[in-house]
Amino acid sequence: EPEVTQTPSHQVTQMGQEVILRCVPISNHLYFYWYRQILGQKVEFLVSFYNNEISEKSEIFDDQFSVERPDGSNFTLKIRSTKLEDSAMYFCASRLGLAPGETQYFGPGTRLLVL
Amino acid sequence: SQKIEQNSEALNIQEGKTATLTCNYTNYSPAYLQWYRQDPGRGPVFLLLIRENEKEKRKERLKVTFDTTLKQSLFHITASQPADSATYLCALAGDTGRRALTFGSGTRLQVQP
Image 1 (cartoon, chains in turn cyan, yellow):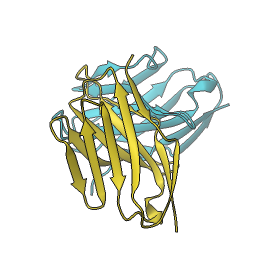
Image 2 (cartoon, each protein chain N blue to C red):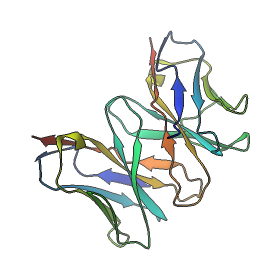
Image 3 (cartoon, rainbow over the protein chains, first blue to last red):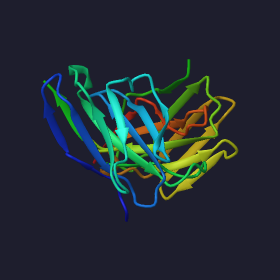
């Protein structure tokens, strides 16, 4: 069964450094998402992406964040200058279309630790 | 403001019993509601979706109800097994139409053998 993959599984970085989290969505899916989950807290929406542009973003997704689909398969989340509070699990998700019955499929996540 | 609440942080039951988890929401008019399972350190896995015009949905040992008047969904696992132990998340698609999911905080279910 096709699945969303994410790399790396774990990333440790120093505060102020840039990180890029990578995702390979399911191949025929059109809608892509990033969510994050701070330890012990809810899964929170960051950004959605369709047709090579951001569809919607949450208040969390400020100027430090950017997303890109650099080629036909990868979908990346960049954090320009990491802060301690960016430490979290980051989940990529993809979805075939926007019909109400369609599911978002989540990747296994990247655990980011900012020191 | 919009809120999704899952009333129990944790639920412990004996194997073979039925687990019932609750999800309440306010200031939403969702077209549908979803339930996900999340194991520690893993991404959410989709279980069931129920539409606003459906009262009940079943899939194997899982049953979901949706009451748009009460603004509540109940999620049942019958004949529970230790392998059902996980965190269960309720999620709504934002009613702005962007279809990103807003998750509840989850209920951690522990099924004792």
